[in-house]
Image 1 (cartoon, rainbow, N blue to C red):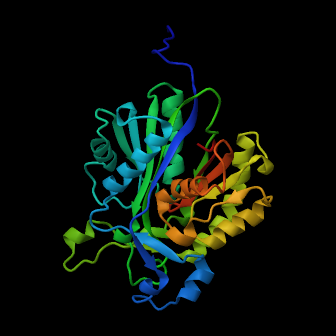
Image 2: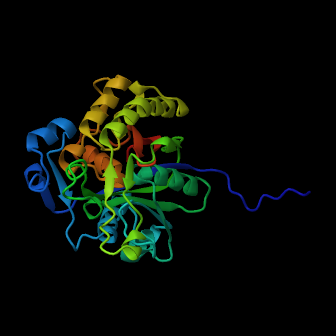
Image 3: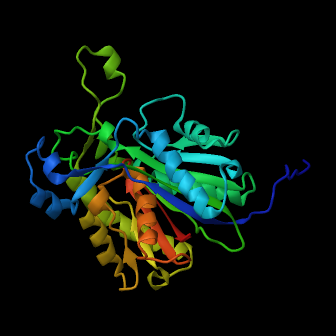
Length: 334
C-alpha cells in the first residue's frame, strides 16, 4: 500500500503570547455569604483562606466576560481580533447545550470565521484546552488560538449549601497561543480517577426539570474532605511527573500555579514539593474564591500584573477537579 503524507506539516514550537483577565465588579464578603449559611468569616478563612469572591451581574454573561479577557490577551500579544484562527472555551457553568459558548465569543470578538468549540472538564478544563491549543498551533492547523477559562459558578451553586456556597466565584481568564522560535509550552501530563467521580457532581440531570413536578435546580454538590484527601495524595506526584516530562527540576521554576481550589491545598502542594523561596505559588483564591476553569489564568494574570513573577519565567500549571480529573504542563510566562 502506498504511503501518503496528507499534507502533514512539521511540528512548530508554541508559546503563550498574551494574557488577559475579567473580574466581575461585585465583591462578595464572607459576611454576606453567611447570611444564608450557618458559618462565619473566621471559619471560612481558616478552612479555605477565602476572604472575598466575585459574583457576576446579569450583564456580565459568560460570552461578555470571556470576550473581555480575550481582548486584553490579544492586545498584550500585539494582535487584533482578525488574527484569531480558533477559540477554545473551558467552562462548567454554561447552561445551554446549543449553541456552544465559543462561537458566541468569536461573534463578540468579530473574529469570524474562526473555529470555535468548548471543553467541559471542570477545574482542569483550562490546562486541557491549553494542551489542545498547543497541538493545534504546533501542527500548523492554526497560527493563533485563544484559550478562555470562564465561569459563572454563582449560577450553579446553592447559596444555602454550607459545603459549597462560600467556596466558588465568577470570572474569566484568557491566553493567546501562537508560534515561537523555542518551546514555550511543555508536555501535558493528564489523567483521571473515576472512582471519585461523585465527589464533585451536579446532583441530578437537567432532565429532572422536565419530567418532575416541582423539581429543584440541579445544584453542584461536593464532598470537600474526600476531594482534599485525593488532591493531597495525587497532585504533588502529578507535579513531579510534569517536571520530569519537561526535563526540569523544581528550582528551574519561577512559579507554581495550581487550580485555586482552597488555600490549604495550595499551601500543602507547596510543602509537598519543597518549593524554594524564589518559587512563588499562586494564591488568587484569597480574593476570588474558586473560579473553576478560570482560576489558573486568573491567578497567572494577577501574578504577572502585580510583579510577583516576571515575563519569561517558567511556571507549572496544575488543574484538577470534578471527574476526578487532572492536567498539568510547564509554560513560559508571557
